[in-house]
Structure formats: structure tokens, C-alpha cells
Length: 55
Image 1 (tube, rainbow, N blue to C red):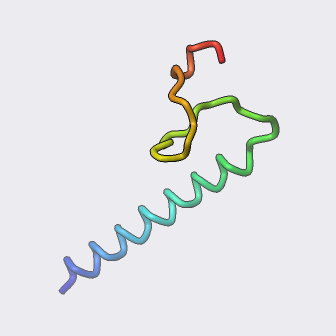
Image 2 (image 1 turned 60 degrees about the vertical axis):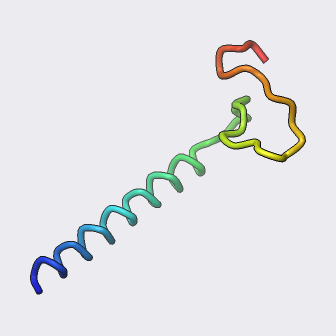
């Protein structure tokens, strides 16, 4: 029983930390970051180069 409780707590702490880091990253953006979307399947956007393509 203790192992299951420990696993649930560790999983909850992991996801809380992950969510906090994503929120901190999103809130820290002050300027436009010209990065390609991570997933553009079916969005109608033409595929381009990566971060080093110069676009």
C-alpha cells in the first residue's frame, strides 16, 4: 500500500513541476520568438526549415 501511495505522490509532484516549468516558460516570453510550430500536420502551413533556416 505504501508503494502505491509513494508512486501517486511522485507522479503528482512530477506533473506539478512539469506544468509549473511550462507556465514559467510561457510567461517569460516578452518578445516574439520566430520558431516553427512543433506540429503542423494538416494546418495548411508549408513545411520550412528548422531553427537555423534563416526564416
